[in-house]
Length: 285
Image (cartoon, rainbow, N blue to C red):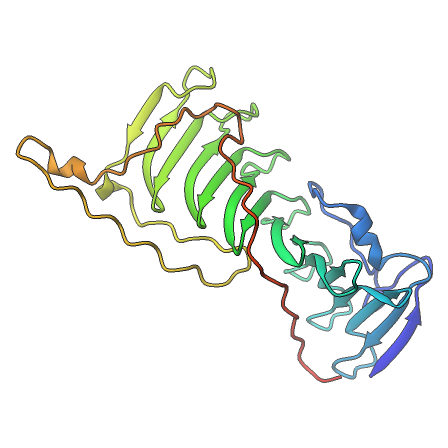
């Protein structure tokens, strides 16, 4: 069933509630994009997927161009997914998700030229963004986190091909890292600490390969399965005077943590192509 509506000053949601929920605290997005679904005079073409008399999909148009589309995935009358389009009316520029169906946003994804470039998440559903992710293709490139949920970043993580390479932790909440974890092929290789708080590590602890635990898997921005992990390099041959147990200990990059804080060595690699997929609702138009 198709319906055509005209939006007034107060835009209804799929079932009569607010069409655009408030952005969570800590978001770094542009509010002007979100207002594409909440502007006077726009045309709305609504679809009742399950034929219960309440619209479940709403396409919003301005001057004949689609600006956004909203989905009520569980037919409770609230918007669960909002997708915003660019000037051509087709290319996705932003997408918002309410995963727990409480009417508040839990993830905001940002696209560049239709490709997922970064995303923000509220992982504990308190209406505050606590995780910011940057993507390189479909793989993680770097990540910021508010582990302590105090409203500020306290963890910086860097990835190579989606595998964690380095993590920097602000354990005393002074805005600067005091602890670094260095990884090799997804496994913890070294821990560095700044005990005198001068910005440089003064303690280093190498982690033996047998104590490093299982290797981390690569993280993907789009939720698809990660690529197969690279095969570990065989340890170099040992001589009579070399400790064979030490031969397999991963080497670190030898850099000094704390320099250029906190973004030393960050890559600006252009993401590979990846476009948003269409949500699926049960029922029929």
